[in-house]
Length: 181
Image (cartoon, rainbow, N blue to C red; front, top):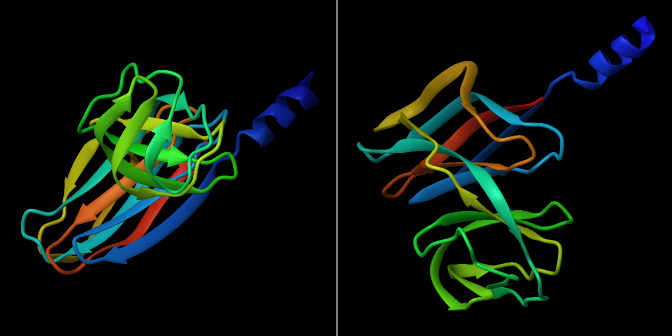
C-alpha cells in the first residue's frame, strides 16, 4: 500500500513552463491544457511603454468543440454557440496542441462563431475556450516589472491560461512561468 501511495505522489510533481513574447501594441503567450492538471501562474516579468499597461492573466472556461472542418480564416464552426457572446475573448486549441487567441465579433449562424482576426484552420475535435475575467497586474511604463508568488493566478483544471500585456509601440512578456500540477 505504501508503494502505491508513493507512486501516486511521484505522478503529481509539478512541471514548470516558462514562455516569453514581444510585440508593439500587444504581446501574449498561452499555456496549453493538460487534461488532469491545473495551471498555477507563479511568475510574471513584463515590460511596456504604456503608462496604463497591465499584465492580464485569464483562464479558459467551459470549452465548445469544433464541429466542422474550417479553412484558415475567421470562422469556427460549432454545434451550438451557447455561453459565448460578441466581445468575448477566446483561446482556440487544436488537438495537435497548437494554440491561438481571438475575439468574437459576430455569430454567422447558430453554428458559426466569427472572430475579428484570421486564425489557423480547425478540424472537428479542436476546442475554443471563453476566457474568464482573470487578474490584472499593473505594469505601467516599466522595464522588467516583476511579480513572483505561489499563486498569481490559478486556472481551472484541464483548461488553458492566456497572458497578455499591452503597449503603444513596445511591450514584452519577458518571462511568464506557469506551474502545471
